[in-house]
Length: 201
Image 1: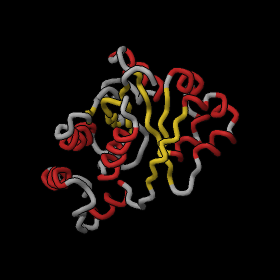
Image 2: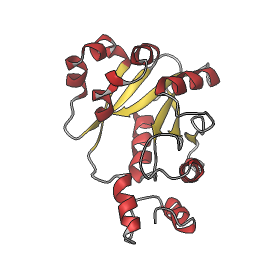
Image 3: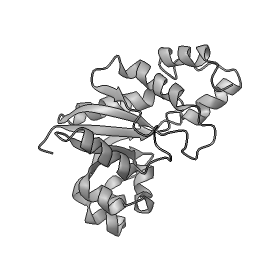
Image 4: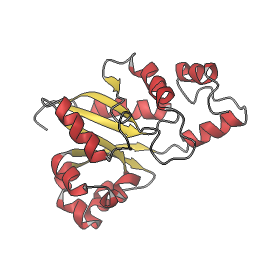
């Protein structure tokens, strides 16, 4: 990784959790060539149950990102007639930031399914992927066991950053629906935003 880099953290962020930001910060600590992490929320066209509006998910991310000069949030996936494929978002970002290497952050659960992604050969040949290990997953073993992944093993980086929390956005939404406290689970500014806008009820 000779050039400076930007890493994309894509997801629904419905809502964003402390763990999303903590993992992003750890990636910045580990890879000193990465100058910025851009959070890329999916659009409402993404087929996922319970997904709230683009505006609210963008705003919640922005509340935290604006307090960290190395974090940013992008609406690049919002203004299309369909939910873009990951490779399309990566290529569009590379066009916007030609002086940077654009990288992708995924979990090891996604790595196991990467062969099913649209134009995965192009994705793996053009971009480096940082993999966060989930549960007991061994990234190197996953790569070795898949012919396509092993072909592009030099572009798949095992971060050795683990996330083993059972906390999920689904759990947060259920707690809110049941009128339970979510204090200490999300940044306070996001909790305040959820309350002010009466979300997830």
